Image (cartoon, rainbow, N blue to C red; front, side, top):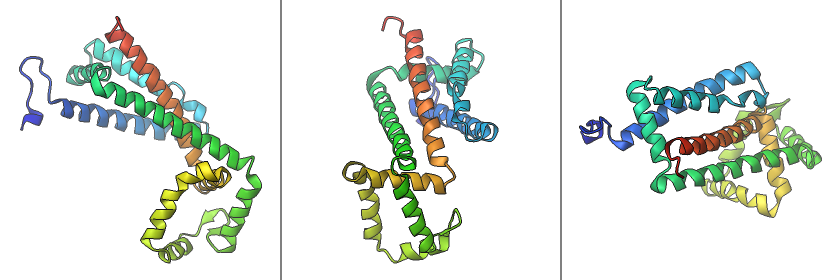
Length: 217
């Protein structure tokens, strides 16, 4: 298969295969470290500062020193391709998009927990009245029974309408996110706080790598 065939000139593999290898490897490393940091630092997202920068910086340093073999060569090729053609603009757009979503989510949850706290408590009280919550935990059986009474079209319409609340009724949108975050033990807020930090660090790394490989840019 051409996908696994080596280029006889520079020893590289198919671009998509190299992209897949590097991406899956980084995801596996980041996911593992994220779990470990969550266990060590608990809810303190500040413990995530510098993790991504440190890992990417170390991989880049070892790759340039040719200490990572074929993986290092593939990593450098992918870094260089990140600054060329359509991929460059795709990466920039993704960074801006995820930063916007992350910051908006954090702000919305904060507002739901503070500015719209009374409304949030009313929603939680309603959940408890209808048996959808037992203490601070969701009653999945009751939720399942209620959702089964809704048609697929109604469920899809509700999901599609949720983003519109951010514009038309921000207080409701904010409370929905705040309640969801509370029911998930704070994981929504923690996830997006860490995500925003990591996206910023990745953006900085991309800029630094551009200076290293494209000094004239």
